[in-house]
Image (cartoon, rainbow, N blue to C red):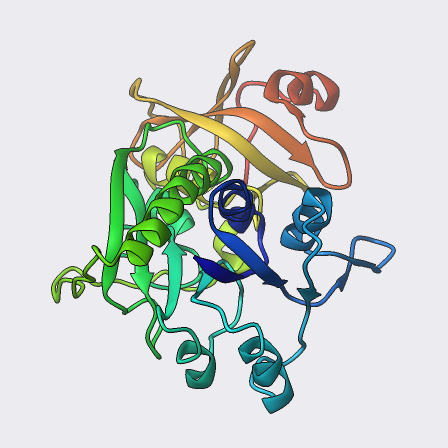
Length: 312
């Protein structure tokens, strides 16, 4: 199967690698333009561009600023792809692009559709405390994540998994699934199935404001928010006037009557903080503003945090 690959984020890289290693033929890679990043605001290539260069594919790497331009669509059409593979590209494809290949455009999405349609399905699944997740490969239509399903796979999500590790695991499994889907399409033995009408939900883009912790919430709600929002925007709290980013937590269900936000104990395993449901959030990894990430114990020692102190 001759394909164009469209992707931008790290989540897309395993699929590109798996397809390149398969019997299918990549014609070109399409990704977002290089954009300024970091403190120096120097242009940085996308993860997909970086991987494409590392693979030494000897195919064009296209970075159109606007996919709807006629000259861009004509350039894509000139490759005469059998199918276009889309993973975490970052833009909605116009109808003319969707109609280009005879086998259409197929997309790897990080949820069991129709649940969590949108930009951040993995994050929202974790924030909601889902114990099962999975990926879906769909035939794309003109709407967002509503196309008929070609394949899906479900798996368990342990309570300590965060958005980084779940994203990596899902990307690897989805990459294998995409290779199989292209092979099945080529053989003509795959029929797309409409998504169920019930159970649809949205997974909108994340914002910085989502990361502010409210200690009056239940401990499990706070824990799920922490693991769902790493690495960006991350969950933050105040220790005095110091803003801290909380990277890793667990839940201690030992009953605690201290006011929410109160430090209950400081130990080698972390800092226990009282929550609104009288359970405790165990902070394990933390990062003070403009400092490196560290263990909660190291933070407590360096900032002289003690039992009875408060997080805001």
